[in-house]
Length: 345
Image 1: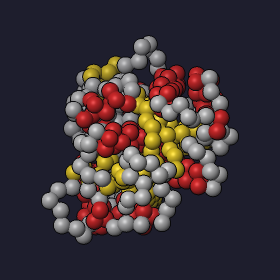
Image 2: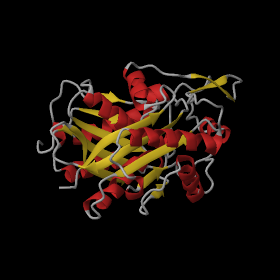
Image 3: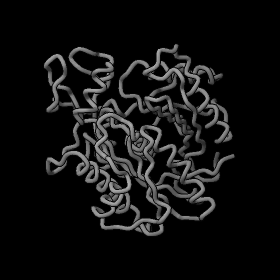
Image 4: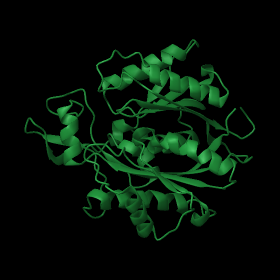
């Protein structure tokens, strides 16, 4: 069985809240902040989006840095025992080939973020340009840092925005964007997010624990012409269950990065039906992007931050959760999570 990791701290900056409590409360109440942006679609209508309302009208790289820094500060302020110099920062960014990506030099961006924070992190820090699946890649990377190097904490952060003219033009051209002329699309958003990862110490209070990780590639991705039978997500789910050392019967609901497109709902449903052998009354699906829009590489951290809040406040749909993520190029990631007191399984 794998080495489990506890998610012990969160920081969120979204279009519905400038910290984790505000963001999670708004998502729980299904409050969105979808408004007309300064971008126009091909039909001459304003594109709807979910912008993060910072105190100044920053844009581009500066705004990405401000959002990431705020989320990281929130994480650190809630965990005074963390020493940044002894803590690797794994920074999740969009895929390097995504249209409209405003970051041209990842290392320089990382350095600029540290300048903004006025902090130094552990030498094992790195940038993961992984898109949606970035948080799962970061968790996989965090395991040996904690298990073998015996580091006490790893900080995972992400920042991203799709409210960029070139990105919006690309997605509209490919009929991916929700516009006046396309109802099967996503609403663009932006967010910064951070998570504290620790080993699962024996604590009396429950913790959100990641037990299993799985990865695969879907050949019939959203831009392909192939029929969708969800081979990639099915394989990722099976691998994460094996990694967690459990069967699918313990899973009680799922949380995903789906931002509105029918393709992803279909894929999620097919993949779970191919693995599930349990008679169920219901299997709820949560998708926080409904409230904050498509936030790119930040969505995975938002999902886990929201899940932690839901478990703490006792409004989750159960204690064993399937979380899954997917990139446009077919990369898929699956996570098996549990809200539990250490020692129980």
